[in-house]
Length: 356
Image: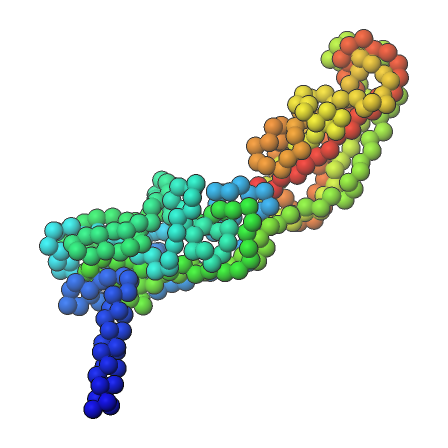
């Protein structure tokens, strides 16, 4: 009698476990008696497919919310179905991209989501116009996909559905960790059919690995650069605004390719200076004369704060980094700023690089 009771309890527990397994959330595609082999899907390559994004690196000064280079994936999805594939009671067919990986929204960033397994990294889906798309719960005809991207709508007689858009990874925090993640998608129609034959054939996976979470792409060959200006006579600066004694110099860097390089020069004597004239140091004795620095194209450098943040005041573009030595040419000149008296003139500036 005791043995029978134990067996009865065991059977009840097994039955309960079976019921719980049936209640776990997943892609509900089972309204038809047979939901397989009704449709085929390309994105544009045929499914199933895995997109591998390996050896990704994050630029040090990439702003939060910016797409991570080399993670943009174009989506040109076509779902072709047989006649009679759909039998919704509402005659409304919702095509979606079911997300089989648990995601949470990122506060402060519109329609950006994270798996939580790769700290500092988020995912953003884009429509054909490049606008962020929500990943949300989609319900139709009694069927719910808890996490899905709405691709389009049709009717029971629809046989072809297309969607053009993209996805990209996004920097969502100052600190990014090394590691990898897999995000799994499956196209289909909730409660009706799989997007590509069956469940396993419909899988589309994005596998991403971060190997270098914060890349500084250049090193400075000589951090202390002295520019020796020649001795001149006051007569060489006949009027206010006139310049003389052009003296070239270069900043030498050793870089890796892959970044867009910006630079900000800061007046070391007056860090708040945003003009194009360098403040004379305290040991200078000449008056009425200032120093200016010119870029290679002849435009003057204006000074800004010591910051690598994108958009810093008077930050200027250097260009794309290349592998190896990279020389940034400048020219220093005297400029008359008032009544000139003889003496020495010294100036000191610092430069800050920004990788964007």
